[in-house]
Length: 334
Image 1 (tube, rainbow, N blue to C red):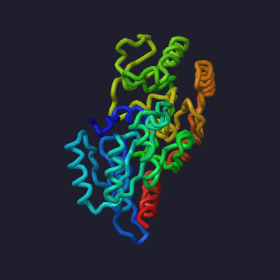
Image 2: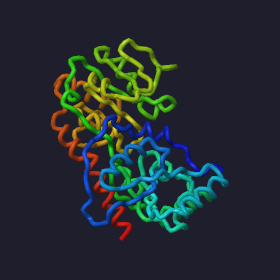
Image 3: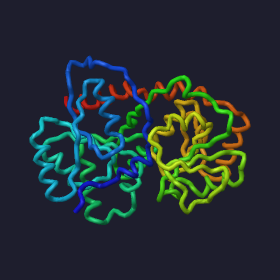
Image 4: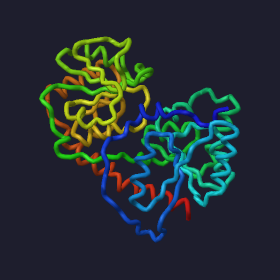
């Protein structure tokens, strides 16, 4: 039995992390001193969170999930010997034994919902015993968090009340990063194997009908995809800084989403964003016609998303969010 639900790839596609760091520091003034928490390390967010939380006097220990019964014994032994009281689990749809073991060992468990984990948990396929056990576990953990209001509303349908707390982006944007290019370039993320979920049919139709626009496709080398002269397949890109400088529009037409870091990063850089969801400073589009209309308006107006820059940088300031995490941990410790 595989107790570690291997979702690193899905996590990366749902919420890409920005590529630069925040060098600010902060000292906690709550009188508690250092707080230590466990966070599962198989997600793309682990290093970002650890770096940010260290700046508010939180030590993050790596939590490696078990992959079988023998690993579960080692996992239990290590967790049981630790004085760390809080286990903060990113992505909510792991095997129930991970939660049960942590709770039985006296840990305060936080479940942080991100995106398709909510889609899985709210699926109508709830009759299997493992699903029923998982639903029970969700009712006895200490706290549920989620990254967006839409996910919080979905979780309510299965009796979970989740507090909205975004994941911490690793974001520093310099003045030159907010430049507005002359070429009409649209950035799209279409991870290999999940193209349809990310709206590939609409994207390629848009590219076909708007040859004057350049489409940059992340996460895909284009194998089996339409090969149009105005589409450039970039594959996997570790550092997007140089890519963002070429872009006017970030287009994200997912069937389901949480709060992707690429949306946050695009707004912080003054890019226009077309997304499947209603969100500040974004153009909502779920159909071809809506996306086409939004693209036309953006290109006709040819203006950067100036007001979004200060809003995104303030709302998702890593140090401010890290302090919010610290406050949550303190709440559970008291």
